[in-house]
Image 1: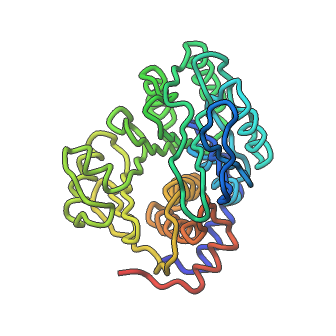
Image 2 (image 1 turned 135 degrees about the vertical axis):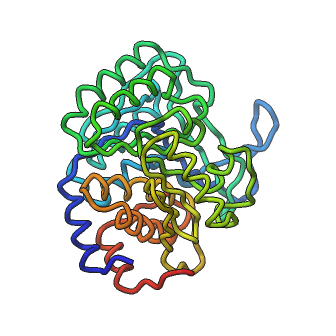
Length: 339
């Protein structure tokens, strides 16, 4: 594991980076419901649900951007689509408040701002309500995204490509444009985290979890910790043959397996004490990898920093948390590696 003083150097170097993220920007909505006797609707006679507290935070690619900013990146540029709706306005407001360098593109028709609405009664999450499952990216929006990225790439040290939704901004045209940019700018960091379309990307460093890696090759594993080193090394090698770039496979408590084109290396996670909440940890890993690699840290050091950052995040319950340099340094000073 990287020594604390070296970790401090890595984090300081991140403060000089300019990083872009193109992806599926979402809003996470948390609605606390009243536990008392429900009021009946006069119109339908059915019991109503009363919200006692509500809060909102960026999700999807928005959470990756939030993590990049929390890590101290000098500049974070965002490229994505929101709808012409209240949730889109709130997401734009939140991204601006966090310090994003620019605004997201608004598509007025056939696009709802993606929202994961999570009602809670006490500590128990109820049925989630999703917005934006049936979005269709317009040709105008497609062209706008490609134009924005093409104009901005010169000023970026790295670009995160973050696909999380089945009906997303990543049309075939957008993916081909990104692949072309990655080929044209080989000295810049392109890091892709694509839940459904990994095989379509190339010339980019690839981050995915063990379950996703197995699924690519028609295999089923129980969870991210159950695959062997040998299995994941084999998956990573095959992905490398497609992308031509390093591959990092996350394994929850077992850390990260990285393949650099020559050999597979296991990066162990820091010891984690319950209770934990894994929601958003993958976003933290992506952000830490992108930030560290964009600062020209080695692949191994970047993966080690990512495991520390994720360990910080999973200790933050019922939120898609972030990790700050101070929190990472405090953990680095006391952490014990998991076996």
